[in-house]
Picture (cartoon, rainbow, N blue to C red):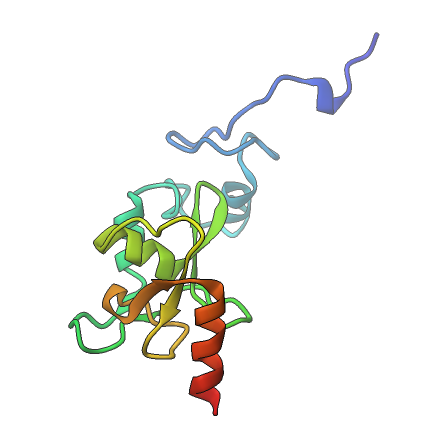
Length: 141
């Protein structure tokens, strides 16, 4: 019985250190496009480095009093996002957990400064969703 393309065993990208799925010519989609454009096939930046290194490269600011603005991807809602294990995560939540503490279950982070792109963990407070909404409404009025 013939074997279809989807029945073949998984094959990885042929670039050393890349664990993405093979697309064409032995490369994953990202390396395939880089090869097509004549760019270096070195491992892609998002594959290397730990979360903290990737995270802090995308933060502008650094003193406790001022906002630390997220310079990476910003969602339509105004919140920064970073990919973790192939899934989007809100940047301010990552910052809080990296520098302060785990966010208690059932609570959300309120931006005390009112700036959604701010990732300064000292500008964030864990509160209930109801309090977060109430404070947001108070900031608008």
